[in-house]
Length: 380
Ligand SMILES: Cc1cc2nc3c(=O)[nH]c(=O)nc-3n(C[C@H](O)[C@H](O)[C@H](O)COP(=O)(O)O)c2cc1C
Image (cartoon, rainbow, N blue to C red):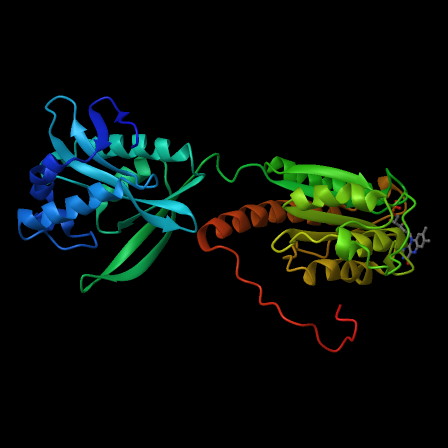
């Protein structure tokens, strides 16, 4: 049994047997049921039968179905409920007696019902036929965000349906892990990464930056002990940063170019980080940033991106390859095109992070088909 919800003019309460007559008043009205999935009730017996089933539903704690009662007169004027779940998020439906339309009652009821659901759920789903202007207004006034319009066939009619979502606290907290692979903590790579970090922060994304280029990080010895433990056998920056990577929604890896490839330290770090960790990296967003004095930038760039593309991680791009040029950080300051590219990268990344989070709520991630590995006798 859920507690009653009170608004200025309404009480939202569980339905009861004696409500059949009031429900029949709207349930028989073809104008009211026009955009609903069910047909008008032909007699009060139909309403009574359905009401009996609804009352039985109350035995289930997950049943959220409230009658909307006017405080002033005690009259039951409508109903609001959770009609189903979309990727675990409740979908709201409502209906009311036509005599009480355009008086703000449903806006008031939806607000109370939505707030009650937000105590348990982060996202709420609601739909309305595009032609149902009143219902779209009720939804929009309650702060729901328009997401899509979809054609659907309902009761033999082709209808356009508007889909809306309400997200508690917007997209919420999002974090990016930034790895500086330069031996020089305040060198060109650091300067380049700062430009990305600033753009991300400007767009509300938290950043955590770690320098691995100046640490003693050895390469992978292929001992495979991580297969059992989920940790690298060498307890260094890899094991320290792995949980931060797990929590992060995205990663930016910056490296100076050494002999036309990424710094060996970064490669040792990434080999062991990606190989030893068992958590799912799917849809974490990745970006590579490279700094060179003169040449070899794109091969280093490709090298870093390979870690992402084997891990189902979308790569963020910018309006040029993510690179700056210089020998000292001051040189990078003069590379205005490079810095501009990195600002664009940061903003694109923030957008992708938010879009993927919203997309996951809306569509869920695609299933990954798994099976035996082939060609390699050790199965890895
Ligand atoms: C061992 C070593 C190899 C390098 N190889 C290249 C190279 O192949 N191409 C290039 O343009 N710069 C090369 N450089 C220069 C650096 O990549 C460049 O100065 C970079 O911007 C330095 O970044 P940092 O200040 O973050 O270390 C090399 C530097 C070192 C120390």
